Length: 187
Image 1 (cartoon, rainbow, N blue to C red):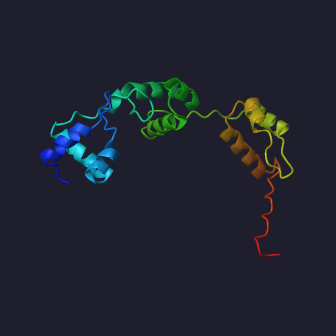
Image 2: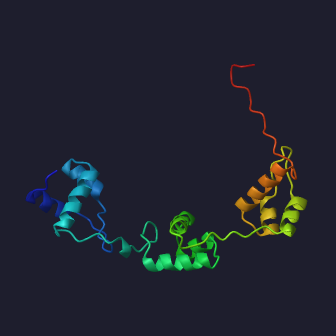
Image 3: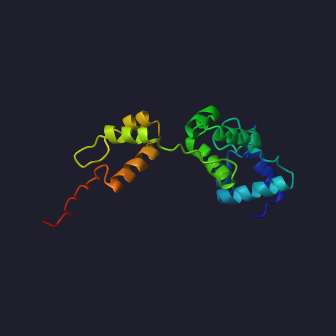
């Protein structure tokens, strides 16, 4: 859509911008008012920003942490914390961000070679503790993951991988797949 002066004037009257970031807060309503798609409104707003008729959008001024881009300072802090061995969950709490958000930054830093994957190796004492304390249900599914995690000081995923390896070696019993019920109509 080509924005004529009368359209621009009308837009400026109904436009609501976030005072901190200059993000448009009512693009759907503007689309309904002009009878166009929201995406077309956003393209028009982008063009008006390029022409300096609207202020630039600045996501770094966002007050809430949700969906705010990472600053270089935050990324450096995360890099340092990861290299010191802090867990992703701990870092997420510190920044007030989601686990997945920190995980995303961590994965990017791993790809760039800026952090190392700190995996602690299993000691023979930890392995024996896992074997001795392993409990299972009637199908040999692990029944005490939490206990094994606390006992060995390894993550859920690490305990799960170790149990799988021990099952493969025949040290722990293999899980028995429960049979699936017959499909309707077949008897």
